[in-house]
Amino acid sequence: MKSRLIAGLIAASFASGALAQAASAPAPPATPAAGTAAQARAFDLQGHRGARGLAPENTLAGFERAIAIGVTTLELDIGVTADGVPVVHHDLALNASLTRDASGRWLTGTGPTIRSLTLQQLQAYDVGRIDPASRHARLFPGQQPRDGERIPTLAAVFRRADERGARQVRFSIETKLDPRRPGDTVDPEAFVDALLHVVREAGVSRRVSVQSFDWRTLLRVQQLEPAIPTVYLTTRSDSFDNLRDGAWTAGLRLADYGSVPALVEAAGGKVWSPRYDDLDAPGVREAQARGLRVVPWTVNDPVDMVRLLDWGVDGLITDYPDRLRALLRERDMPVPRVLHD
Ligand code: G3P
Ligand code: CA
Picture 1 (tube, rainbow, N blue to C red):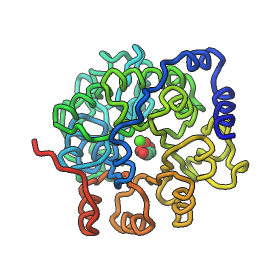
Picture 2 (picture 1 turned 90 degrees about the horizontal axis):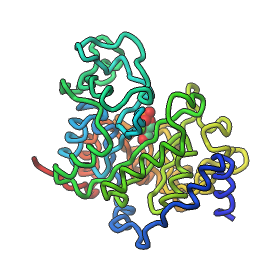
Picture 3 (picture 1 turned 135 degrees about the vertical axis):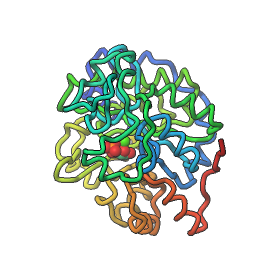
């Protein structure tokens, strides 16, 4: 029943060309993802965009900082450039609060989309510091700048983790698309294909999860690489509710399933990642009873962390992995190994 549902969803979500491609895709590895069974039970301490509260987001400096603190998982966002390269960046277009051009001037408004620039063009921009005049700077007063940081490729993040000896660290990779703005990114099929190509080339499939608010990409990952866990992001805020209609959820409608965990389970998810203030204790219990892990985002206040830990969540995504790590130690919970450089 479930596989019929997912097949139907994929059929509804993609054009026939994409389906043909999926059908002829290489078979998934015969062995299940080694190492993931033990990690699946461990608490998942995720550094959001690296360690956004402490170092420039989605940069190699930020990921190094998170690795030095000791995280289970590096959370990161990706887009795909004009020349088809997956790069690590949160917004579909360059964010003026974070970006300086080749002459060192802050962008004065939203910049060009990632999709419209080649990797070489993108490398001209510096994303190592928050514009001190921006609202963003007030949100993260403790972030230490690292001038000269560029938007890294996804491949470079894998390499840097390896160079730092972080060969156990996992990567939760968020596909950043917006179904309301299809022209601003490559399409979901091309997006996932580019992502999986880099993951396979780096040989890190066993350490990767793919997350998204745009569930079309998750269904394609499930189709092409069933051993890679998919993480279903949800948000019910006034400004962004990805469950309001079927637009973000590949046509799935919450009203047909009765609860968000039931919806995520039906779609084939392994992990439910809700906005933390949408979550309650019964929601955690229901999701776990359905076999889902629950990993809310983005939790920065220790008071919230404690409440969610008391509810038994399976992991937390935070801009301050140092705070969460300290709390886990206080509670005598295992913490990931620290790597000294
Ligand atoms: O991992 C989920 C979280 O990162 C989603 O929010 O906007 O920070 O990518 P955002
Ligand atoms: Ca993200």
